Length: 382
Ligand code: PEP
Ligand code: MG
Image (cartoon, rainbow, N blue to C red; front, top):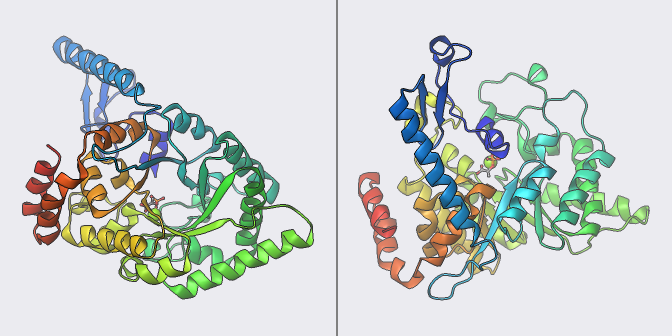
């Protein structure tokens, strides 16, 4: 999440450089190449000139991409795709609009709760959600309920220590164990739904039991607003994040009881490969192209499509050019990503003939070995 936030603030960054502070002195000139994970300390004249050129080329490319802002994302064979943006704070909406995103596919509300001692009250939350809903002017805004815990603690000093925080009381588990906090957030989201097209997204569902408890809490929040004659969207849609392998395997059951699904590939990879996404010692094993991960994603997309429930991907894979064609070919029609990726992904959609991707996609999905999958993926993207 340091990475997600740094990108949100447009700060080029590289993490896990361990001894960097020992090697770099204050005041030294450094080049931070976030795209390749390279830091160059005291670059010589030629290196500096080379990077200035790269920077100019990058800026030129961004200018060209801007021309696609109002172009619809449609494949060469006429399949329409929704490209939504992920946001962390209300002010990110400006970036989403600047790239022509057709909605907010993931609003991570936990950033409103982090780095402070007091919880934001209902009014503060309502104001933030309403601002986003109004600024998007009728375009969909998918607000994810609190995903605190694990790597996203409210106040790090007060964080409960436990052996496996990623497997502990986080996200919907935490909300269901703290009904008052959840109730306040649900009321704030529902109230804001009167001012735009809001959808509610539940993180980290692992069982129908949790889903049904969530629905009960949502009904309770709706009932309390009705009793006070406070308006909200009675037809508000409820969706679930599919980011735990158990949920992906059981996606049909979730699709039956929910209005939409959203695949969180960041956690789905972490949990299916047992790789801590925050531990750089195992980062080289964190592989989105692992056959097991690809199969879980495909199962989820198929389950949603079978039951006529929209499925989106809102994890990092949605903004990763290497996977755009594969995901399209699996049947995905909604992608949600950091605003900085929207136009690059749109260009890829515009240059894709979906029908032509099917044979290679079959080969990829029938392969059991990453070493076979990666060259096939490269071929698919040529
Ligand atoms: C994910 O897990 O892919 C996701 C989108 O949620 P987060 O990165 O906030 O855990
Ligand atoms: Mg997640």
